[in-house]
Image (tube, rainbow, N blue to C red; front, side, top):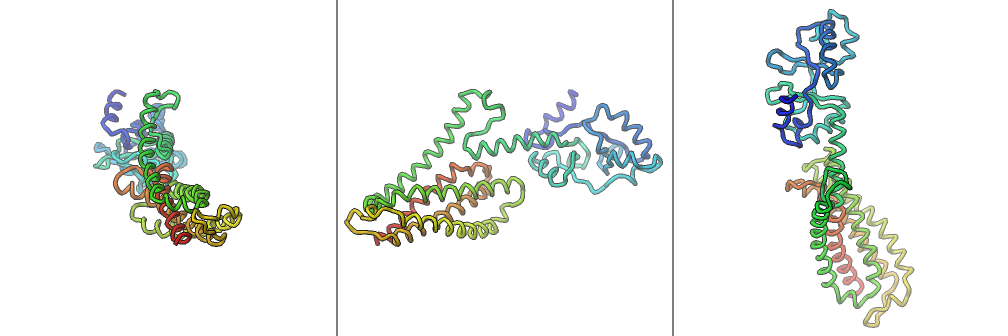
Length: 345
């Protein structure tokens, strides 16, 4: 046990080698089914699982096949193992990221996967219960990153207050500093805000639309990246897909914004200069702004995780707060630019 633990400590924490077990059932190739069952009966008490029995070349320990316990039990005792074993194997490398182990096991619906080294020698197995632990931990870390709360592995109430304060304050400070850009954007359109007061009533609605659409896209793309359903090479397909979706959603929400603009009190349509804006003019401006902001938010939310992954940063950091901050700045610029062009041109 001491030797096995020392061997496992040689591997990095987030690799397959660090999560595997060395208690696997193994047999040489020259045995018959009956002889294999006799030996397996001796090994079983000390093995993690015996549902898969791995066939090795001796003495190199090179993996040549696998036979299931079901096939061994159903076979005639004189049947050679080489006729029962499966040679088309799904294996994991000992230095492979552990996240990929979970993906492989889910993809092929297996309860254990063999782990081999660079010489294809069997060094251990990864079982389904090990993978469940990894999936839970990885999902927890992703959610923590998406909430910009930092990551911690122990239970929330057991984490020291100083640790929680440090991690959460750090990310909140980053988001706060980025959020100062919204202040600068609002400052740049101060004249427009003063001239047409009604615009300030629609601004939160437009920004919420952009933030929500961006969060939707970021969540979906981050999850697809984690599952391996899309990769960096698919960026153009993702862009094209989100452009179409963003346009469709923007048009739908724009109609709601236009409808609401016709319910605005006439007193709010009078500008600071004494001019009067019609409901139709306000509706067109608000509708165009909502549609454009929704499209922009969708594209930002979809492309940000891909950009993070491209530069080697965890896509989970493309979280709701970060997406909302970027979309808020973009939304303010879009909203007042359209409003100024159409209502104050």
